[in-house]
Image 1: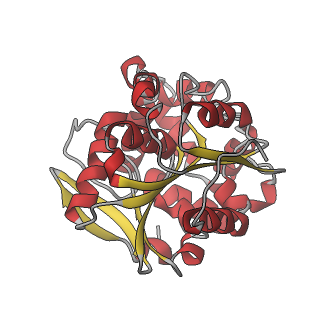
Image 2: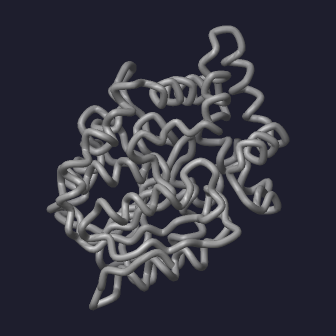
Length: 299
Protein backbone atom coordinates (compact mmCIF):
# COMPACT_ATOMS: atom_id res chain seq x y z
CA UNK A 1 0.00 0.00 0.00
CA UNK A 2 1.07 3.59 -0.61
CA UNK A 3 2.48 5.29 2.47
CA UNK A 4 0.30 8.06 3.84
CA UNK A 5 1.99 11.43 4.55
CA UNK A 6 2.11 10.77 8.30
CA UNK A 7 3.87 7.43 7.89
CA UNK A 8 6.23 8.82 5.25
CA UNK A 9 7.60 11.15 7.92
CA UNK A 10 8.33 8.47 10.51
CA UNK A 11 11.83 8.16 11.88
CA UNK A 12 13.59 5.14 13.37
CA UNK A 13 15.78 4.61 16.41
CA UNK A 14 17.40 1.50 17.86
CA UNK A 15 16.27 0.52 21.36
CA UNK A 16 18.02 -2.67 22.35
CA UNK A 17 17.35 -5.20 19.58
CA UNK A 18 14.25 -3.33 18.38
CA UNK A 19 13.99 -0.78 15.60
CA UNK A 20 11.41 1.67 16.90
CA UNK A 21 9.40 3.67 14.38
CA UNK A 22 8.17 7.03 15.62
CA UNK A 23 6.70 10.30 14.44
CA UNK A 24 8.19 13.55 15.70
CA UNK A 25 6.98 17.11 15.30
CA UNK A 26 7.34 20.38 17.16
CA UNK A 27 9.68 21.91 19.70
CA UNK A 28 9.49 22.56 23.41
CA UNK A 29 8.71 20.25 26.31
CA UNK A 30 8.77 16.61 25.15
CA UNK A 31 5.34 14.96 24.93
CA UNK A 32 5.11 11.20 24.35
CA UNK A 33 1.89 9.86 22.81
CA UNK A 34 1.23 6.13 23.25
CA UNK A 35 -1.34 4.43 21.03
CA UNK A 36 -3.53 1.39 21.64
CA UNK A 37 -4.02 -1.88 19.83
CA UNK A 38 -4.25 -3.06 17.19
CA UNK A 39 -3.36 0.42 15.98
CA UNK A 40 -0.21 2.52 15.53
CA UNK A 41 1.00 6.08 16.02
CA UNK A 42 -1.17 6.96 12.98
CA UNK A 43 -4.09 7.49 15.39
CA UNK A 44 -2.41 10.68 16.63
CA UNK A 45 -2.17 12.32 13.20
CA UNK A 46 -5.05 14.75 13.94
CA UNK A 47 -3.85 15.60 17.44
CA UNK A 48 -0.12 16.10 16.91
CA UNK A 49 -0.42 19.15 14.59
CA UNK A 50 -2.39 20.92 17.31
CA UNK A 51 -0.04 19.99 20.15
CA UNK A 52 3.23 20.41 18.23
CA UNK A 53 2.76 24.18 18.35
CA UNK A 54 3.88 24.00 21.97
CA UNK A 55 5.47 20.58 22.52
CA UNK A 56 8.04 18.26 20.99
CA UNK A 57 5.59 15.49 20.13
CA UNK A 58 7.04 11.96 20.04
CA UNK A 59 4.66 9.18 18.96
CA UNK A 60 6.31 5.72 18.81
CA UNK A 61 4.81 2.56 17.37
CA UNK A 62 4.58 0.03 20.19
CA UNK A 63 6.41 -3.30 20.07
CA UNK A 64 4.62 -5.70 17.73
CA UNK A 65 2.59 -2.98 16.03
CA UNK A 66 2.94 -0.45 13.26
CA UNK A 67 6.33 -0.04 11.63
CA UNK A 68 8.35 -1.00 14.71
CA UNK A 69 10.37 -4.17 14.15
CA UNK A 70 11.71 -6.65 16.69
CA UNK A 71 13.58 -9.96 16.48
CA UNK A 72 11.48 -13.11 16.18
CA UNK A 73 10.02 -14.16 19.50
CA UNK A 74 10.71 -10.81 21.19
CA UNK A 75 8.82 -9.93 24.36
CA UNK A 76 5.84 -7.68 23.61
CA UNK A 77 4.30 -7.75 27.09
CA UNK A 78 3.28 -4.62 28.98
CA UNK A 79 6.50 -4.57 31.05
CA UNK A 80 8.50 -4.88 27.83
CA UNK A 81 6.52 -2.00 26.29
CA UNK A 82 7.23 0.22 29.30
CA UNK A 83 10.92 -0.69 29.18
CA UNK A 84 10.92 0.18 25.47
CA UNK A 85 9.48 3.65 26.18
CA UNK A 86 12.19 4.28 28.79
CA UNK A 87 14.84 3.14 26.30
CA UNK A 88 13.21 5.27 23.60
CA UNK A 89 13.48 8.36 25.81
CA UNK A 90 17.10 7.51 26.61
CA UNK A 91 17.93 7.08 22.91
CA UNK A 92 16.50 10.53 22.15
CA UNK A 93 18.22 12.15 25.13
CA UNK A 94 14.94 12.93 26.93
CA UNK A 95 15.15 12.79 30.71
CA UNK A 96 11.53 13.70 31.46
CA UNK A 97 8.38 14.15 29.38
CA UNK A 98 4.64 14.60 29.51
CA UNK A 99 2.87 11.37 28.56
CA UNK A 100 -0.50 10.76 26.90
CA UNK A 101 -1.68 7.14 26.73
CA UNK A 102 -4.78 5.62 25.15
CA UNK A 103 -6.07 2.03 25.37
CA UNK A 104 -3.02 -0.28 25.54
CA UNK A 105 -0.83 2.81 25.51
CA UNK A 106 -2.75 3.96 28.58
CA UNK A 107 -1.79 0.73 30.32
CA UNK A 108 1.85 1.31 29.35
CA UNK A 109 1.57 4.84 30.75
CA UNK A 110 0.25 3.50 34.06
CA UNK A 111 3.19 1.12 34.32
CA UNK A 112 5.59 3.99 33.62
CA UNK A 113 3.89 6.07 36.32
CA UNK A 114 4.11 3.20 38.79
CA UNK A 115 7.72 2.21 38.15
CA UNK A 116 9.43 5.18 36.45
CA UNK A 117 7.60 8.21 37.83
CA UNK A 118 10.77 10.32 37.61
CA UNK A 119 10.51 10.16 33.80
CA UNK A 120 6.99 11.65 33.71
CA UNK A 121 6.10 15.29 34.21
CA UNK A 122 2.32 15.31 33.65
CA UNK A 123 0.15 12.40 32.60
CA UNK A 124 -3.02 12.09 30.50
CA UNK A 125 -4.82 8.74 30.37
CA UNK A 126 -7.69 8.08 27.95
CA UNK A 127 -10.06 5.08 27.82
CA UNK A 128 -7.32 2.76 28.92
CA UNK A 129 -6.80 -0.86 29.76
CA UNK A 130 -6.69 -0.86 33.54
CA UNK A 131 -7.25 -3.11 36.55
CA UNK A 132 -8.82 -6.33 35.21
CA UNK A 133 -10.93 -4.69 32.49
CA UNK A 134 -9.13 -6.11 29.45
CA UNK A 135 -9.71 -7.62 27.02
CA UNK A 136 -13.18 -6.11 27.21
CA UNK A 137 -16.26 -8.26 26.68
CA UNK A 138 -16.80 -6.57 23.32
CA UNK A 139 -13.26 -7.38 22.19
CA UNK A 140 -13.17 -11.05 23.16
CA UNK A 141 -15.11 -12.46 20.18
CA UNK A 142 -12.75 -10.69 17.77
CA UNK A 143 -9.68 -11.90 19.65
CA UNK A 144 -11.04 -15.45 19.65
CA UNK A 145 -11.54 -15.33 15.89
CA UNK A 146 -8.08 -13.88 15.28
CA UNK A 147 -6.44 -16.61 17.40
CA UNK A 148 -8.37 -19.47 15.82
CA UNK A 149 -5.97 -21.99 14.19
CA UNK A 150 -8.47 -22.62 11.40
CA UNK A 151 -10.02 -19.21 10.79
CA UNK A 152 -7.47 -16.77 12.22
CA UNK A 153 -5.50 -16.12 9.04
CA UNK A 154 -8.68 -15.66 7.01
CA UNK A 155 -10.28 -13.34 9.56
CA UNK A 156 -7.22 -11.09 9.80
CA UNK A 157 -6.90 -11.06 6.00
CA UNK A 158 -10.55 -9.98 5.75
CA UNK A 159 -9.81 -7.12 8.15
CA UNK A 160 -7.35 -5.84 5.54
CA UNK A 161 -10.33 -5.10 3.27
CA UNK A 162 -11.74 -1.61 3.82
CA UNK A 163 -15.40 -2.62 3.95
CA UNK A 164 -14.77 -5.48 6.38
CA UNK A 165 -12.65 -3.33 8.69
CA UNK A 166 -15.31 -0.61 8.62
CA UNK A 167 -18.00 -3.12 9.58
CA UNK A 168 -15.74 -4.61 12.26
CA UNK A 169 -15.06 -1.21 13.83
CA UNK A 170 -18.76 -0.40 13.76
CA UNK A 171 -19.74 -3.79 15.20
CA UNK A 172 -17.00 -3.45 17.80
CA UNK A 173 -18.36 -0.01 18.74
CA UNK A 174 -15.00 1.65 18.26
CA UNK A 175 -16.71 4.91 17.34
CA UNK A 176 -19.93 6.70 18.22
CA UNK A 177 -20.21 8.29 14.77
CA UNK A 178 -19.56 5.78 11.92
CA UNK A 179 -19.04 8.62 9.44
CA UNK A 180 -15.58 9.24 10.92
CA UNK A 181 -14.49 5.89 9.43
CA UNK A 182 -13.23 7.44 6.22
CA UNK A 183 -11.13 5.64 3.63
CA UNK A 184 -8.15 7.67 4.79
CA UNK A 185 -8.62 6.37 8.35
CA UNK A 186 -9.20 2.78 7.23
CA UNK A 187 -6.14 2.74 4.97
CA UNK A 188 -4.05 4.27 7.76
CA UNK A 189 -5.12 1.46 10.08
CA UNK A 190 -4.71 -1.30 7.49
CA UNK A 191 -1.27 -0.40 6.10
CA UNK A 192 0.89 -0.76 9.24
CA UNK A 193 -0.74 -3.86 10.72
CA UNK A 194 -2.73 -5.72 8.04
CA UNK A 195 -1.35 -4.97 4.59
CA UNK A 196 0.95 -7.99 4.16
CA UNK A 197 1.20 -11.59 5.35
CA UNK A 198 4.07 -10.67 7.68
CA UNK A 199 2.22 -7.73 9.20
CA UNK A 200 -0.92 -9.80 9.68
CA UNK A 201 1.13 -12.50 11.42
CA UNK A 202 2.53 -9.86 13.78
CA UNK A 203 -0.97 -8.60 14.52
CA UNK A 204 -2.26 -12.11 15.26
CA UNK A 205 0.61 -12.67 17.65
CA UNK A 206 0.03 -9.32 19.34
CA UNK A 207 -3.68 -10.04 19.77
CA UNK A 208 -2.84 -13.41 21.30
CA UNK A 209 -0.73 -11.57 23.90
CA UNK A 210 -3.84 -9.61 24.87
CA UNK A 211 -5.37 -12.76 26.35
CA UNK A 212 -2.24 -13.87 28.20
CA UNK A 213 -3.15 -13.96 31.89
CA UNK A 214 0.33 -13.03 33.06
CA UNK A 215 0.25 -9.99 30.79
CA UNK A 216 -3.27 -9.06 31.91
CA UNK A 217 -2.13 -9.09 35.54
CA UNK A 218 0.34 -6.28 34.90
CA UNK A 219 -2.37 -3.63 35.29
CA UNK A 220 -3.34 -5.12 38.65
CA UNK A 221 0.19 -5.69 39.90
CA UNK A 222 1.15 -2.07 39.20
CA UNK A 223 -1.52 -0.61 41.48
CA UNK A 224 0.68 -0.16 44.55
CA UNK A 225 3.04 2.01 42.54
CA UNK A 226 0.24 3.85 40.74
CA UNK A 227 -1.34 4.73 44.09
CA UNK A 228 1.87 6.60 44.94
CA UNK A 229 1.96 8.59 41.67
CA UNK A 230 1.35 12.19 42.71
CA UNK A 231 2.23 13.99 39.48
CA UNK A 232 -0.65 15.96 37.91
CA UNK A 233 -2.84 13.54 35.97
CA UNK A 234 -5.86 14.10 33.74
CA UNK A 235 -8.36 11.36 32.89
CA UNK A 236 -9.63 12.40 29.47
CA UNK A 237 -12.42 9.98 28.66
CA UNK A 238 -14.88 9.22 25.86
CA UNK A 239 -18.24 8.93 27.58
CA UNK A 240 -19.80 6.44 25.16
CA UNK A 241 -17.04 3.83 25.05
CA UNK A 242 -18.52 0.37 25.71
CA UNK A 243 -15.05 -1.15 26.10
CA UNK A 244 -13.58 1.02 28.83
CA UNK A 245 -16.37 3.31 29.99
CA UNK A 246 -16.29 6.24 32.42
CA UNK A 247 -16.48 3.95 35.46
CA UNK A 248 -12.83 3.00 34.83
CA UNK A 249 -11.84 6.65 34.68
CA UNK A 250 -13.63 7.15 38.00
CA UNK A 251 -11.61 4.35 39.58
CA UNK A 252 -8.35 5.80 38.31
CA UNK A 253 -9.39 9.25 39.57
CA UNK A 254 -9.79 7.73 43.03
CA UNK A 255 -6.59 5.65 42.92
CA UNK A 256 -4.06 8.11 41.44
CA UNK A 257 -3.12 10.73 44.05
CA UNK A 258 -2.14 13.25 41.37
CA UNK A 259 -5.36 12.85 39.35
CA UNK A 260 -7.07 16.24 39.19
CA UNK A 261 -10.26 15.39 37.33
CA UNK A 262 -12.13 13.13 34.96
CA UNK A 263 -13.08 15.01 31.79
CA UNK A 264 -15.84 13.30 29.80
CA UNK A 265 -16.37 13.82 26.07
CA UNK A 266 -20.06 13.19 25.25
CA UNK A 267 -21.26 11.33 22.15
CA UNK A 268 -17.75 9.98 21.66
CA UNK A 269 -16.60 6.38 21.28
CA UNK A 270 -13.39 4.57 22.10
CA UNK A 271 -11.36 6.27 19.35
CA UNK A 272 -11.84 9.73 20.82
CA UNK A 273 -8.81 11.16 19.02
CA UNK A 274 -10.59 10.35 15.74
CA UNK A 275 -13.98 11.77 16.71
CA UNK A 276 -12.91 14.77 18.82
CA UNK A 277 -9.32 15.64 17.87
CA UNK A 278 -9.77 19.39 18.37
CA UNK A 279 -11.34 19.02 21.81
CA UNK A 280 -8.89 16.30 22.80
CA UNK A 281 -5.91 18.50 21.92
CA UNK A 282 -7.48 21.56 23.53
CA UNK A 283 -8.13 19.83 26.86
CA UNK A 284 -4.73 18.15 26.90
CA UNK A 285 -2.98 21.43 26.12
CA UNK A 286 -4.91 23.32 28.80
CA UNK A 287 -4.01 20.71 31.38
CA UNK A 288 -0.35 20.43 30.43
CA UNK A 289 0.13 24.20 30.59
CA UNK A 290 -2.03 24.92 33.66
CA UNK A 291 0.21 26.55 36.25
CA UNK A 292 -2.15 25.63 39.11
CA UNK A 293 -3.72 22.19 39.09
CA UNK A 294 -6.34 21.48 41.74
CA UNK A 295 -8.03 18.17 42.46
CA UNK A 296 -11.61 18.05 41.24
CA UNK A 297 -14.43 15.63 40.51
CA UNK A 298 -15.98 14.26 37.35
CA UNK A 299 -16.98 16.82 34.75
